Amino acid sequence: MNIKALIFILCLGLIAPAAVYAQNFSGQWLGKVSESLNDCDRIGKTEPGDYKLTIVHKNEDIMLMENVEQVPYRGVVRPDRPLKVFVQGVYDLHGGYVTEMLDIEFDDAQKGKGQSVWSWSDGYYQCGGRFKFGLEKIRD
Image (tube, rainbow, N blue to C red; front, side, top):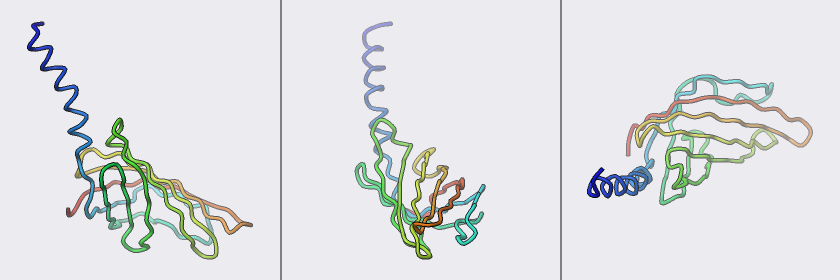
């Protein structure tokens, strides 16, 4: 391999991660819940169907908010894993607290998929569930 080809390949290796990290996920998204498991009798959380979300992504900080409940989920986009995002939210519901963790894997700045694990507790009783979802950007 000649020296020019080697320099070109090395430059691509340095530019490619920065280009992926430069993607911005901010905008309105449609989330489609597919599989949903709920072992809480008193909590009806995330039935299969469509949900609108807002994502705000600035630098490495990312915030996701479902448009009905309006609860913020916050996380960080790591430069070494720019398409995999972890966000977490805690909010009160029915006299207890819900703690929810979402893992999202973006295909690009327009599509993604993920899963959520959540639990609810009032200090005496605890239950939880999980669901999987797909994401599609509908507006910047």
